[in-house]
Amino acid sequence: MIYRQSESVGGIMSKVIGIDLGTTNSCVAVLEADVPTVITNSEGYRTTPSVVAFSKDGSRLVGDIAKRQAAANADRTIFSIKRHMGTDYRKKIDGKKYSPQEISAMILRKLKNDAEQFTGEQVTDAVITVPAYFNDAERQATKDAGRIAGLNVLRIINEPTAAALAYGLDNGQPQKILVYDLGGGTFDVSVIEIGDQVIEVLATSGDNHLGGDDFDERIVNFLVEQFKETDGINLTKDTAAMQRLREEAEKAKKELSSAMNANINLPFIAMTKSGPHHMDINITRSLFESMTADLIDRTVTPVENALHDAGLKKTDINMVLLVGGSTRIPAVQEKVRRICGIEPSRNLNPDECVAMGAAVQGGKLGGQLTAGSAASEIILMDVTPLSLSIETVGGIASRLIERNTTIPTRHSQIFTTAGNFQTSVDIKVFQGERKFTRDNKLLGNFRLSGIKKALAGTPQIEVTFDIDANGIVNVSAKDLGTGHEQSITITSSSNMSEEEIERAKWEAEVYGSKDAEKQDIVNLRIEAGQLLQNTEYMLHEHRKDWDKQTKKQVKEACQRLSKAIGRSTPEKIDEVTASNICEAKDYLENTLSRMGI
Ligand code: AMP
Image (tube, rainbow, N blue to C red):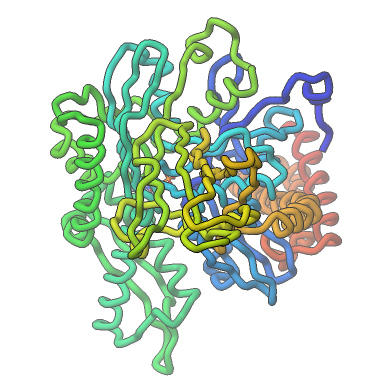
């Protein structure tokens, strides 16, 4: 790829992209003349499925291509990796274990490449969004994924805050809004005050394991049970069949947002000695609603908590913004109407507004907004979603920073020794709202060492916990006796070490170039197939009005392309075939243009 010379060469930053790294779909936007613009990906779509696949020939596929081949390659296709961010989960492929950060980095890398193609510039800086309710490990993992993808992550911002920023740009009058964000895998609610040039998050709450995927799963379970009853076959052991079920379930769910019925028709879903079995099941909207009512109910308490923490009643809310694809479900909208008592706004595109808000924040951080423009004046004040505590005697979580504190924030505490001549102390840091540390998330341990030998209780060590603008926790320590600063790193088992990140970054760079080539080949095969199909259709349509010579030449060019494509598929294609296809495709295109078709 050829880049327009990057502005960063001259000391000015190149464009900063805003990325909504979603559970199901991702979206990327950039500022163009102060206006956030959604970037169309290389397949021509405005959102990219957050799906990664490892094809059998060792290449990696990301986005639509990965999603399309999922049923045929279910074991090696990864969906919803965001649900595992910040955990020890590893996906094993061909003997190598991939962390959620590495898989997410593959998605980010594609988004980065698409943005480079779109802007014609090299892209290095990004703002990435996360659910407001993400804890420290999940945020850190997202930042690391960005680094592995070769991105300099300027800021991690919360998805609902980004949506409010996109909304606030056009609707700057003072108001209090509630952002209800139900995506593919997470639910977030934020109460936000849009003031005169200040967007202040008052409170946030949510559920990191609730989203559209759960709705799909309910339909899948229903289909599995029905099929067991009618055909006596348990489909759960068949990964390919389950993948087809999942795809159809999601399709049916989406259909049910506008229709009252959806039909699930899956021919040849199973094969037994008695022959093939087909699935043909009808789901009504009311059946779907009864299957998923409890999922929607789970959003009520977080909404109430956020309102309570913001010190507001539902009647104080002027506007409810719906964000995330799952808010298209009519029963979800009905529930929001009921809990908030007002009609939710449909002003923003729920799939795109988060990336757009991130692009605005990126433009601000990158100094790319015109001075005096509406967006340049806006100040964003976010909060930490979860309290920070340390473990004290009896496993009690002693709070240092309360949830919904405006970030960045810091808090210091003096520690000392419990035993005589003790030279080190171990401290455990937790995040969460529960009273006992065992019920909260352990962010990590650190050891304060190098304490001067003294009687118990004499050393005074000031430990400072701060939460930066990304919502990420940092810790530092100072021996007040000597004034000596100690450096402390929180070590969390679920996140990657510095060396692991560097190695993954290197691997991603090596693979990145190979994957880009592979992606081009796959696209070529798809385009060639479409061209052939369209031309054959035209040949048939114009069989009466095209002259013999034209028909002969077009037919011949079609045959040539058809032969080149041979038995290849978009997912399985070698370089020789690709070069033959390229040549035959050019030949057909030239023939058509020579004929004026
Ligand atoms: P997001 O993470 O915001 O991209 O949301 C993706 C989720 O929204 C996925 O679970 C989709 O299946 C779901 N979704 C998208 N469109 C619709 C629709 N029309 N009706 C119901 N769910 C939808």
